[in-house]
Length: 521
Image (cartoon, rainbow, N blue to C red; front, side, top):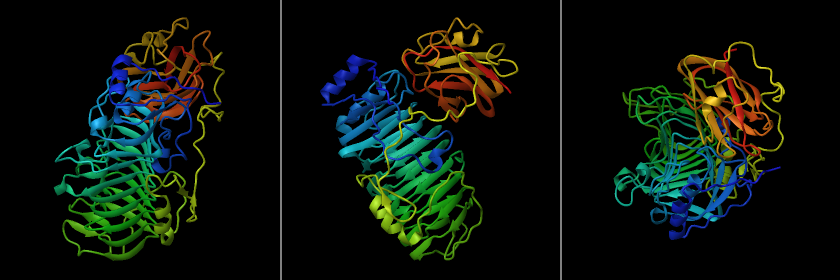
């Protein structure tokens, strides 16, 4: 049973004043499955990507309304789905302030937040000359929107000239059924359509159209920026691009069932140690669609099942090493998730029917046939607890060993807190930490790296069973170590870290954590 979400408008007077001035229409229905389908590719790894599932659904018709919805959450991690309809532009996108957001005018800013979905509905959502910037954030879904003509020079400028960009410790992003387009190259003021840099990982771009730009997108901003990776590109249309389809610097990419048309200078540019698995794509009327270009820092590829239709290849040189005219593999790449490959011969047809915004969110069934997927399952529906078997949380039996949360070198912190975090590490079940609302996060941290493999979340008397969905997060890297529902003993991969966070993403009433115990074994 899906619970109604409660959207609490922090800084209410300022937010509502801005909303009224810009003609914002906010509706706050009970949560609904606005997103269709589920994440695919590398976005399914590292704990998965669910966006705002399980939270409140809000309708926004301006950029200011999008920012107001983010700022109105109980915390920066409270799940929310923002349904967008109409044209979002500089004139209706103002900065909104609040404890749960960090926004800026002239760009849709998803900064230092998590658990958010932005989905186009109704007659469509167009971000006109306005980019979407994801920074220091995780668990983000962007679906069924058009982003066009974002400039880095000229007027107006937004987002460094990128349609969608991710940077600085970003994790788990799924961008699906979008149309990303420009009207020229760098000399006309445009930059990339889909860029990732500075430690961005576990991203999928699916069923999208990228067109009419000098640069499709990149992974890594320089030859030394190689902390990015685990990115999947599938069933996308790349049309009339000069280069970067994509450019890979370090990391791993899985590129399958894409249709490439009119790549004018180069296509998949694997360099600086990057490894790309390139399966069953259709390359057409293009030049140098795969290789290492414009550098002597080699990259690698594993190829199978691709079709090269009227593709030309340059002669190799010191800074250009095209894979063709007869591309062969020079590495192997292991893919950790399941997927179905359409035959390359049908890729142009299936991509034409499915890729881009306002295509009915159709997907391929792996047999070259477009399908309408079922709505996303309600994450609050009963599912097997991934941490089972666990002790009864009303009578928990802690793991063996020393509780590392108590003692020299241990400390804590919290967000959306209504009481002291110190109460979860004092060994006293009569004291507790509780968030101000139904969600929030509590952390244990140490001055030096500490090995942890289990935690025990013990609820205070009278609140047993209040904690619903949760995630355990490596506070050093942002990686999701475990997710599930209900308090009790939780096993995580044995990890050496300085901070571990228990993030409550759903609850009944107000949860109360009496003790957050941590154990090495």
